[in-house]
Image (cartoon, rainbow, N blue to C red; front, side):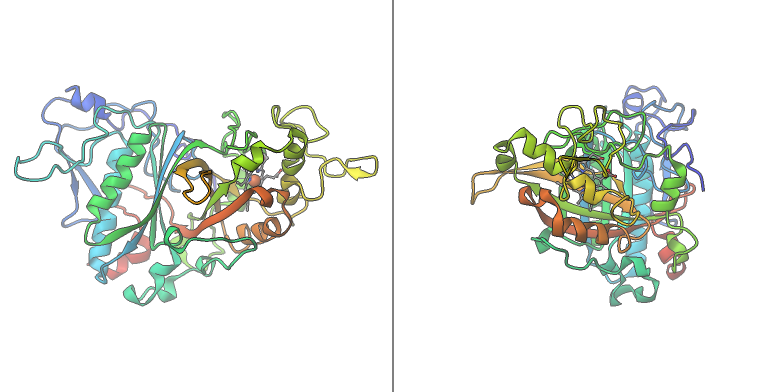
Length: 430
Ligand SMILES: C=CC1=C(C)c2cc3[nH]c(cc4nc(cc5[nH]c(cc1n2)c(C)c5CCC(=O)O)C(CCC(=O)O)=C4C)c(C)c3C=C
Ligand SMILES: [Fe+2]
């Protein structure tokens, strides 16, 4: 299974039309675009002439896999978890169809409908992204374990890999920020464009879903392509050096995309997302000596080189000793997280930094990492890895996991008319 150009974030020519061009009248006529919902799931209908050009920052929406997984990380994140409030599967499917159509339009830089409608009706698109380029916007949708309860008779369609995550060492999870029936990950280089997705999904879903929790993120904390410079996390360290990279197709296929082995055909070509909101106690970290910080991570702060090395890309030498002691300490994060010590586990990290004001109790910043990892099976990958880290990682002194969620992200939508969840729900709706 190879990666299509969709996952590499390159737009084929001749598709899409930017909101800027649209509003600038480049395609002529009115600017109205309607999300077709009635009588067909997931169809997007342009009331103007056909799209004429591809903006360079458009990531194709349709493809074998959902975009936003191996797509080179964008600068900003808007993430939301929703709970379904209807028990009518037709209504749920219709909303997923509308979401699909809206996502196809927004990722192409188009509005989801007219902003100027009848004066006595609400605008169809909320308008705040008008005139903004999509900034490589991707919209990725997933289904949480709780969707597969009695409400829709989906219990026997829940993949084994979507069993709820177990309690893990060091968890300090807030229920209200955890879980969810559905999730939407919107990533863009423009924060307003990413937020626009969540807002319009919530608007489209009114009466069918309610927001459970949401998280904004900035400064991607992991590169997913060798073409990207490694970003830094809020501890000031380069993060993502040894991440899986989209160019390593064999490793991505091996660790990320669900294959024939899945017990549920609808998940083949999909992946599982784990999200963890990890508070980073930056005040304590900032009071710590540089040498301690580097021992905790196992890498040098400025260069990103592994301890004992000189360049970021140097191999992490876990066997090296100095004066009888390991150069990379036994409890260093990179030692414990390394596939050479963890039984060969690899995950695709795609998290973002966050800051949510001040902790009223302590006066400290509530800031950290909104960790997102994609993998074939979180119970075989994230869970054992986090169990090990939660028990032994020197980083634990400086972090607290405050939220957790698991979502099954189905394969990509193949063409107009396809919709998020068609493989799961398609035969249940007329
Ligand atoms: C369960 C998985 C992981 C969690 C949770 C996690 C939290 C976390 N990580 C950092 C900072 C760094 N992590 C680095 C490497 C790294 N981390 C994980 C997994 C989790 N991290 C893996 C698999 C790896 C790669 C290990 C390897 O193969 O060498 C690094 C080093 C740079 C890099 O390779 O990316 C940093 C820095 C923080 C601050 C954090 C929680 C807040
Ligand atoms: Fe890490």
